[in-house]
Image (cartoon, rainbow, N blue to C red; front, side, top):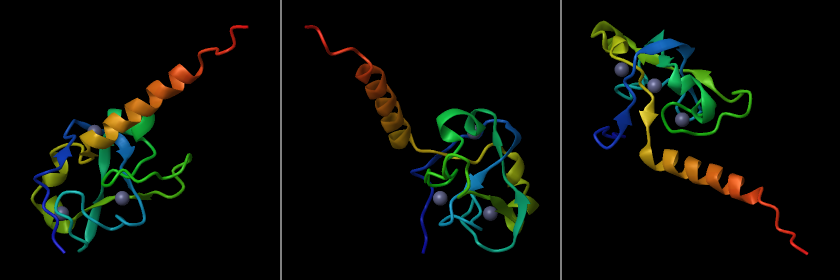
Length: 120
Ligand SMILES: [Zn+2]
Ligand SMILES: [Zn+2]
Ligand SMILES: [Zn+2]
């Protein structure tokens, strides 16, 4: 199973204190090279990715992790990436432009729905 990452964009901002969480499907997978071998260092994500509508979604596939992130597990970099110091390059969250856009559409719809409809 190989899934190449050239079509995915990573955030790469300066990581903060927040631990990156993944869903059960992505558990144990290195966010940089997709390896399941020797998870070594906990993933830290940037401030922006730990806030707002992104904070309760899997950092790799954007699966919903529940309101309290109860379905999330900490993500780990594999030994190889830690050895190459790739874990210091920045926030590894996959920024999926498509899903970000649809999130914004949902928000707009909610705002419009609060307009009063009765005019009698
Ligand atoms: Zn790796
Ligand atoms: Zn980020
Ligand atoms: Zn996932």
